[in-house]
Amino acid sequence: MANFLVWVVWLGAAFGCLASALAVVTFRNPFYSALALIGNLASLAVLFLLLSGEFVAAGQVLVYGGAVMVMFLFVIAYLGDKSEESPWSGGPSWQIVGAVLAGGAILAEVIVVVGLTAGDFLSKPHPVARDFGSPAAIGRLFLTDHLLAFEVTSIVLLVAAVGGVVLGSHARQGEDPTEVHARS
Amino acid sequence: MRGPDIQWYVILSAILFSVGALGVMLRRSPLIILLSVEIMLNSANLLLIAFSRLHGREDGQIFAISVMAVAASEVVVGLGMIVALGRRNIDLDVDKLRTLRG
Image (cartoon, rainbow over all chains, first blue to last red; front, side, top):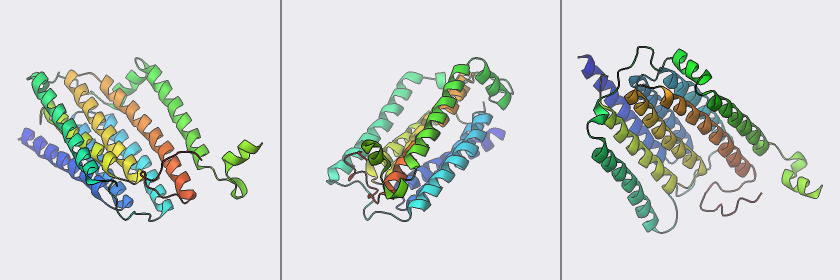
């Protein structure tokens, strides 16, 4: 019975994931696309919970569904309604056909390779302890085995913050900051 | 482990990745392209966490968290560029952006 319930939750989350991903790609208005992506991230967080990744699921909702998507929505609102007339990529229609073929090829390759090589290896997950993926376990790993990754991540975030400020800074007195710099 | 086996997660992740790749290839607006890149990164995250559960080790989850941080930085820089384009009244259309000179 419990297994059946897990399957129901999994199917719901997987369907929500795929439907909202398709919505992100097909909606004309970027605002609705961003809202659909929030649904996609939330369904992925449910899947992470089913895989006992509790801390990652919480981080997904807080960092992605919260901070990053709020930033997206602010930028879309700031830019106003600039929805183009034909949102699909220009050029002749063979480009679209080629893109769909390439996407289908990626999908087919992955599924064929997984089907050929995995065997029943994928259906025998390793037994795990109760606190697998809990914040305590993740934090302990971050401060012992993966300390370097932790520190490098903080530097990457700092550089990105500085880059965002530089890119978004206002030009003084209507002048282009790059031109001022070139003249001096 | 209750529920579906890992191969279902792999297949779901492959489908999500191709949907995101299609979005990157087909759409014109850089905003939607950034959103599609997010879908692709998240499908990779799903795979990392699924294999972390398969092997019973948390290292994959550490990796997924690092991917999340990199994705957040990428969004900051990408959105900064889009705001800079929008402030100069340049059309938000990747087919028309042929040079990235200021």
